[in-house]
Image (cartoon, rainbow, N blue to C red; front, side, top):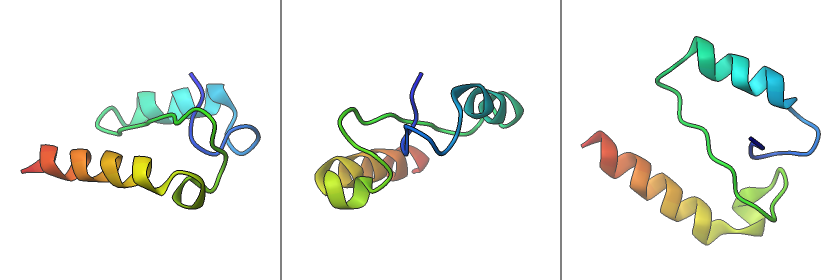
Amino acid sequence: MPYPGRPGLIPEQEADEMLRQQPDTTAMSTPGTGHDLHLEQPENLHTALADFLEGLA
């Protein structure tokens, strides 16, 4: 599964291992973006953050 910032920053196996070690971690992938999700698709980032924060309540 690809992760934000791909290609290049965090190999898939390393990301999977981080998620295995921290099972309460949330990961997401946004197709068509690179490392600058906040610049490339700010509306998607806003929605993801709002949904995440709402889930904490």
